[in-house]
Image (cartoon, rainbow, N blue to C red; front, side):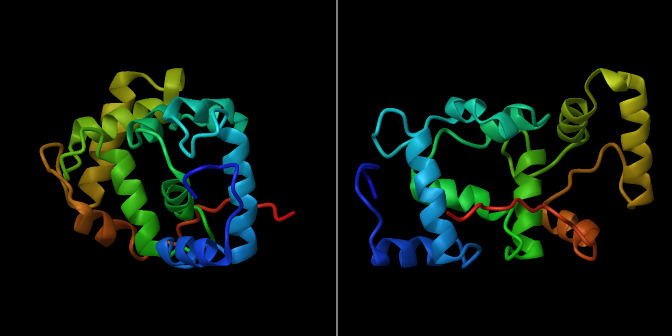
Length: 175
């Protein structure tokens, strides 16, 4: 798996499948490996995070910079682990953990008002003023029982999003 010119063995596929908690089928993993090899332009078994901007669907995502901040590049296992949050077979807890990491912009294990504001700024761009963002965010926090001074941890995200019908899915084309 280290060198992308090699093929995945059945053992590799099963190991990766276990690593991603069976979020992908073996056929999907083989298909994702082909895509990984296409992205690994240096054929070194590693994709630098900025290479992801060459993926059109990723480049146009307003959160692409926040997602890149979470990464320093990927080997194939990390690539699959990252994508597993978008699998329909991924658990709600796994999806919420992923969302928490996106919002935890300074990677300190807590999400502050400023962290949430940063993500909201990425999502809304020029379509909302800074004043509107702050008002909306303060109101949402208040409705959830928090204040602007609150620091949310993962369990808070679980409490807020745990009963939601959260959809975060992407289709993996299988050749």
